[in-house]
Length: 347
Image (spheres, rainbow, N blue to C red):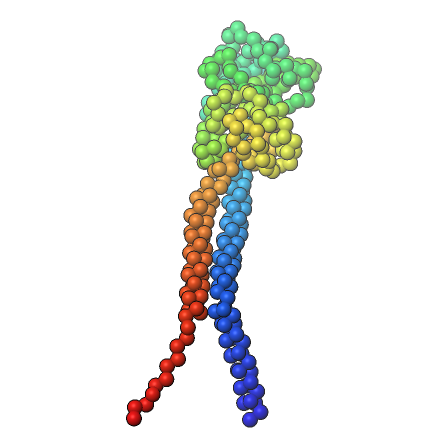
């Protein structure tokens, strides 16, 4: 009996609390409106949090994708430059072999250059003497009167015995097609160690253009290969001829001390701020950067945010509107006088 009484008291207390709460809401319908506003605000806050997190995810995804693009392009460039460097080294080794240099001209050319000169994008391969004249050429252009002693790569190799492989800024060849090229060169030494000339190879810039044109970077994205002094080897897309100084190169050069990284650059020639993902070449004095415009990074996110945000705002306003209508109904009911009817039995 005591247990039943205890449960009865508890139920009675809960019923009074429930009825009191209902009466409070019925007496003050404004609470319903505030409740509806609070629920709508909570829903909008959660939606905003999810959308902000989605924005961070879009940034991280674009950064990682661009880093992978830069890595793939870097590896392709390194592999080809290493092959070209090995071909140049074979020419240097053959030049220092007396037996090779004693062969007849045609046979000597075949031994020194082998089939390297037929490689795609390889424009020319030559040996220059100490005065800058062509001593031997893969295309048989030894009788050309051109002199290359004024070229930067020739001066660098002549004045710096330990420079090794040198990659020049973009230039226009004086022989053959006039397509923009970069010169890869190595120093040639005489038996006594003195300067004997330069082995030089011209690589057509079309190689970099073809490599970069196949990369999807968005409508406002770009990819740039530049030397550590800021000279652009190739940029895609670009309306300028290779060889200009990259905008903001000092910041990129400072940041590219590490193997990879990213930098947000506000200033650019076209006025579009970009996030640059860059990779520094450990083997060569080159830096590769992939630039992504914020409007491309957040394009899908912006479209999705407009739709979801609009729907959530509309839903929140509708919820608040229903709360107002419900509170008005309660107010009207509260103002109506209560009517109690008794049924009188018939005699």
